[in-house]
Image (cartoon, rainbow, N blue to C red):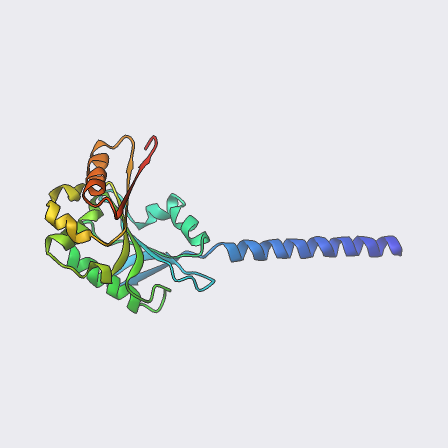
Length: 207
């Protein structure tokens, strides 16, 4: 009957809408995968649209790669269609270990970070030593490995001299700290004052 046909058509439209909605949801979110490069475990997601932006995130002393996932930060970046990797590089790692890890990442066929320099390196707290160790060794190759540095309350900056910090000249820096973190403010402000043209300092309220 006509009524039955109308019901079938309405149900078909509902099914189509549901299918389209599911497709939209799947295309807007990236799947987080586990892997290993150079003996270092990681979590990663890759761009579905060929986006070349690549972000590698290290972690602080009391944390691990899973914390980026549990805090939804990893998924948020993935949903913005970036190539993102949360890497379990030991917090005691220095310049050499970071170099080796970045080389291993681009040689790994299981992720879309396939060229250096990467777009940005995020180093919370203790992991900022990887960059401080880099400049303390007067190694001028940093720009060949990373385009931007995003340190979060990098206490090891206190160990660097003004001359060493000047080796970061030319690399954009986004220095982040929480409003309740006096040391984070101190070291972030130091980066901002020594490298005023390259550095943007951001305070996170109530953190």
